[in-house]
Length: 338
Image (tube, rainbow, N blue to C red; front, side, top):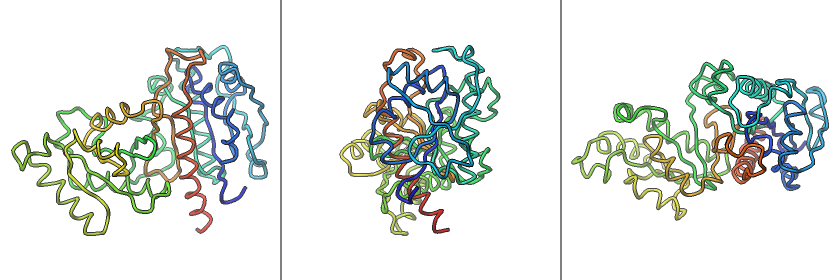
């Protein structure tokens, strides 16, 4: 393996959903293996199930962890996580959640040991993960805890070359304004900048969305823009960072759509999610921003309504893989230079 070609661990996600099918479709493209060495983690019957659903051949070449560093191309690390009879297509099950966590844990262990340079996972089902014992708000916080990472991190949504971070996330709207603090805004801007640099953008252009209608209209509709956002943006600009705003949230994504910015920092969950999903739901990617290991997944869910029907669109999975490869190359290069 060379510095230009990272090794990516891939886990299937919930075996009852579209994850195994998506990975089979991803691997059917020869250009994928030209970009990275890949190790599949999980049960043989789950991977073959995905191949059968996609009507595509999949040859599993088993390896051990000790042999992995000497192997290139596509390999498979066998892991028994779920019995064939326990896989119930299009159903949320505890067994499916347990299998998801076991595969994810193994991928994280391998990343900690330096055996892989990035992790791609198929869609998880949060209810199944919770039923299986995930005692965290979501998989991102679970992964941070597993990695022993206590620094700032958060979910980043990506569409093509555009990233979005958010100051608040899974929080009731009535609590949002109280949680828009200078430090929280600084963290969200920093997370966007760090992730874009990790993906190869040396000088990201970052737009900050306003909280209030018309960006507060000079305080008429709220003072968060004047008291919090403007000073944070000015401080970033004083450090020669390309950060602008606060822009009214009903127009900032027009700038993004025209390619004038590389990232939008939003104030709350749906402020960015609605725009991103309207712009390209089938290409959206979620990145575990801030974590010491590059980790990405398609932004959509397990899609139980089409599971097993060979209807899953591989677009977002391919976008996640391509972005992950770029991030993994940076990760690999940084590790090589100490």
